[in-house]
Amino acid sequence: MSDTAPFVRVSGVSKIFDGDRAHGSIHVIDNVSMDIGTGEFVVYLGPSGCGKTTLMRIVGGLETATDGIVDLAGERVTGPDRHKGMVFQAYTSFPWLTVYENILFGTKYRTDINDTEKAEVSRHYLDLVGLGEFSEFFVNRISGGMRQRVAIARTLAAGPDILLMDEPFGALDAQTREFLQVQLLEISRIEKKAVIFVTHDVEEAVFLADRIFIFSARPATIVEEVPVKDTIPGRRTLETKETEEFFHLRNHVRNVMLAQTKAMEMIDVPTGDAE
Ligand SMILES: Nc1ncnc2c1ncn2[C@@H]1O[C@H](COP(=O)(O)OP(=O)(O)OP(=O)(O)O)[C@@H](O)[C@H]1O
Ligand SMILES: [Mg+2]
Image 1 (cartoon, protein in one colour):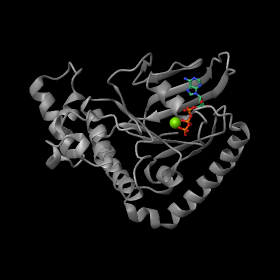
Image 2 (cartoon, rainbow, N blue to C red; image 1 turned 120 degrees about the vertical axis):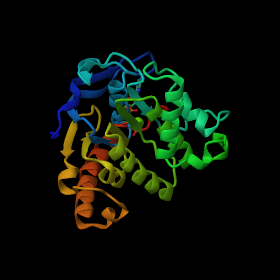
Image 3 (spheres, protein in one colour; image 1 turned 30 degrees about the vertical axis):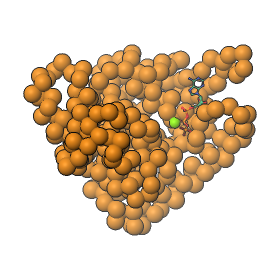
């Protein structure tokens, strides 16, 4: 349980996707509940295909739960809006716009600030993700890591209450990924926004999370809640990964994950379906 007031409340959420002629119905999430505190960094970790993205999409209002409810900042989630900022694995920036224009685009639907403020906000996030010098570059001329920083800045510029990140660094090389992990921790420390970060990378999960929710094989339940922050308090740097606490926690989480991944392999016998 978090030490701050619950900001997100997921209560008894289940999800069953209806089948069609070719596929039977599929029970993806089974009665999952969790509270997430204001400014808390939560990671969803679990085997491929277990339902992490589905639960995150339900929190984001992109998918409806079959059962259960989600409240965000005291309001029932019924659909997507700018209060729920999403960053995905695939690069979602506009190649025909510059870095700055992409970030400014994030403010487009805001009615709480005027055009001057939108420009200021965009500049602020441009600098926060360290792309100030690249503001006039078109995004098809910058690296994948930089494009993900543009996506993060654009999402923040929309003024969300929570960041929902679905394997945002999954397509990046190891060095770029580590660099962005550190930068993301810094951003979340400064912005104090709740983050739900989906990954199936154990090391990434332990490094980033205040708390990890480890998902079971389908239908997903929470097999373990790991209070990482209690074991690794304070600011994290790349040196944190070299500590004994990190090493032990990572091994523990890896073992729990391994059991679930094996269980998942028993369920997901390849059928030729596209995931
Ligand atoms: N719209 C849909 N209709 C039917 N089945 C779906 C739909 N979306 C997801 N599924 C199925 O639900 C299950 C969970 O999918 P989900 O994408 O949530 O898993 P995941 O944990 O995010 O996996 P990965 O780690 O591979 O991204 C999968 O078997 C998937 O095929
Ligand atoms: Mg997924």
